[in-house]
Length: 459
Image 1: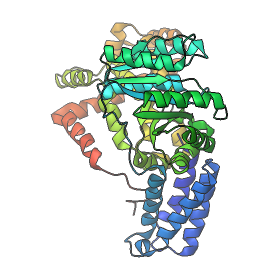
Image 2: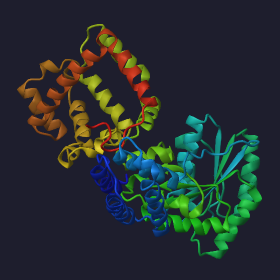
Image 3: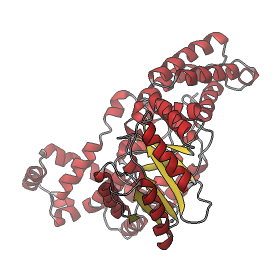
Image 4: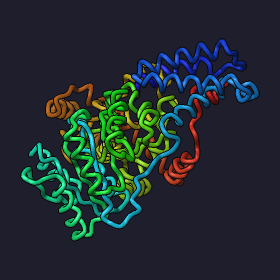
């Protein structure tokens, strides 16, 4: 996510972060590079201009000249201005109303709105412990109603049926009544994808908003459209009273223009990022965390929260007890670890959130291949239960059979067995003499750490 912008900015800021003195000349040179990086990331021109003006004003002022390390202080100013541009703090959903609290979803055709409805329903159900009902008021696309029904069943939300023969206003009124009967805490109303220039469609969703009086009206926009996403959100905000924006498909946005432009152009907060196709791929938007990721400082807090949510703690405890009792870490345990990593978005997703990973040489970054871990899983699945529990029995003929069954080569089997041995040794060290507890305490301590900017802490 935002790889191009991140690469350009970290390279520019690394060149200035170690400077003991800042002059107007080297600040201006750095800001020229920052300006180019933002423009190439498709950030809206007025946003770029204001960003550069604010950073320059602070960088050549008293704050930097009196700092212990002016170069590092300049990086902090860029970081803080990125945060400010994107919204200063997380804006949570306002659910403080008598149930069912209505959330109205708007957006263009093909922006991923119906999928976002399902993601939001799952988010509210699992993280906010809410009972959620969903309804489709899209009477122009029959498949939209069927799609939402399927997704609602997948995420465990109450589905309120609707049909293309009904009027959207009638569907909405009936859905509110049904949600009350079902004692739902939240009702999410999906609407037809529309074009901002279509006056009839805009009038329809405006009438829905006036009728429903939702606590939240969220605009779903494709992050990959760059600054166009911000301009479209602005057009919708002029017809509706938006309370926030959801950036869908943000995982495919290598530029970052939408995230950096939406708040400044619309005045409305980004509330969520869609980070994949699965229904659990919705993240609350934290400007400070995203700014840290863009500048290569990592995002340890989000990584820990994902681990808390997605790592199977009972399995982890069973594994720790097993090794403490003197039993070996076998290939079945290794397979479980691969599954746990996959549930957290894969190794590349985890590494992206660790401080300093963006500063690794390109060759090292290219070696991080989630496909390799998938192949490992296939190799392990091609073994017998006995081989998985006792890897030492895997001889030459067994390797040939496993390679044939998994569509790999014998050297791939050897590599896997070697990596398993290394993991086995590491697990033994971690669990020995309370090592697991120390590791967990260390992870908890990281919650209070703020990763340094590029170049900080290196002398």
